[in-house]
Image 1: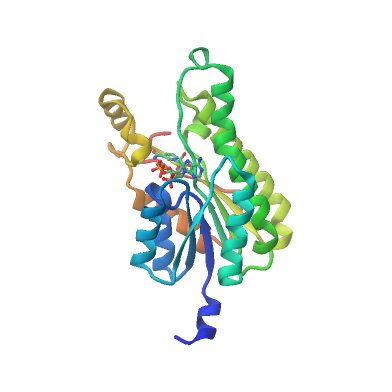
Image 2: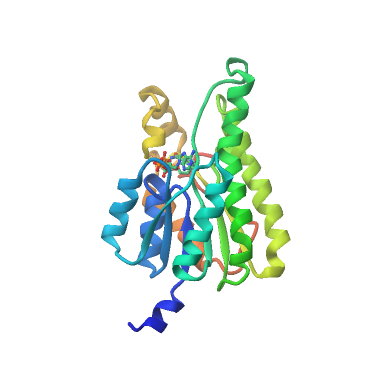
Length: 247
Ligand SMILES: NC(=O)c1ccc[n+]([C@@H]2O[C@H](COP(=O)([O-])OP(=O)(O)OC[C@H]3O[C@@H](n4cnc5c(N)ncnc54)[C@H](OP(=O)(O)O)[C@@H]3O)[C@@H](O)[C@H]2O)c1
C-alpha cells in the first residue's frame, strides 16, 4: 500500500471507544480498513491496547462528556492527524438509575447532562469536517429504553430518547451536506455497564428478551458499522438491536 492509498482510507471518531460497545465498534471499523480516533476518559491503557493491536489505525484521544473543550480538541486531533473525518460514532455514555421520587433533582438532571452534553458538543464540532468527508455519517448510540421506556430509568431513558429526537432532527438539517444521521438502540448487552445489574433483575431481563439472553458487544458493533459504513439509503433511522426485548 503506498501513501496515496492511505489517504483514501476512511477516518472515524468513536466516543467511549476504550471499552465495551465502543471498543468493539473501534475494532469493527479497523477490520473494515478505517482509521479510528478512539476516545477514552479514564481508560487510556485500554485505548492504547487497541492501538497496539492495529498500529497506525487507532489513535487514542482524551474526551470527557462534561467538558465541551475536549469535544472540540478530540475532533481537531483526529483531523490534524489524518486530515479528514468521514464518520462519527457517538457512543460514550453512563447509566444511572433510580425511580423519579427516589432521585434528587440535581442527580436526575446530571444524568441528562452527562449523556447529552458532550454528545451534542462532539456532533457540533464534527459537522464542518464531515461535510468535507466521503459518504459521511453520524451514528448515535441511544438505547431501547429511550424508545419504549423502563421503570427506574426516567432520567437515563429521557437522555436516550432525546438522542433519538436530536438525531432525527439533525438528519433533516444536514442531509443537504450529504451527511447521514442514524440512531442505534441496543437492548441489554453484557458490558461493565450491565455488570451491576442484580442477578434477579438479570434473570427477568433474560426472560423478557425473546432470544433469552443479553447481547454481545460484537453484535451491537456489527449494527453500528452497518449504519456507519453500509447504510447509504438510511438517515433518521432507529435500528433496534435488542434480541426482541421490546417486542
Ligand atoms: N450495555 C448495555 O446494555 C447498553 C444498552 C443500551 C445502550 N447502551 C449505551 O451504549 C453506550 C456504551 O455502553 P457500554 O455498555 O459499552 O458502556 P461501558 O462499558 O460502561 O463503557 C462506557 C464508555 O464510555 C466512556 N465514558 C463513560 N463516561 C464518560 C464520560 N463522562 N466522558 C467520556 N467518556 C465516558 C468510557 O470511557 P473510560 O472507560 O475511558 O472512562 C467507556 O469507553 C452507552 O452510551 C450506553 O448508554 C448500553
